[in-house]
Image (cartoon, rainbow, N blue to C red; front, side):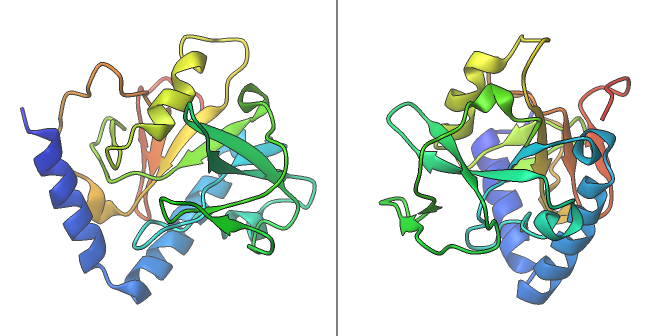
Length: 196
């Protein structure tokens, strides 16, 4: 099997090498795929992220979905991430930049288990929808309490560029499994019988 740190470097190098124009085009294609997922089409509350550096950009989803959908964005807390509802998801008015360089919205956080779907960034992924994060563990710590729930938890979707796909690897025990990873070319499901 492959070393996760090496795969992370490989995926991030490939992501940066795409160039800004290709990343914008690939993000648009990937977001269109996300918008067509049945769970997304039925969703009222969706967690997004504000893209950093060369990350796939999920913000176009706010243009493709109905106006009644509420979008939530992460804010770093002592224990992980809190998700704050944002009325204007395409604007950072009033947001502050955290010590980690992430733009964070003001206001009270919503309950994570009330989200219908959560779109997460990633460094790399494999064809079985295993996610390699950036190494901070923020999403894994935040989502750990929801795993194993069948009655109420958001569906977890990774958003990435095809260039970030790496060979198969064994996730770490603390890695939270995604339901799928969506790129500009395909939807990679964790299990084939999983309803998306």
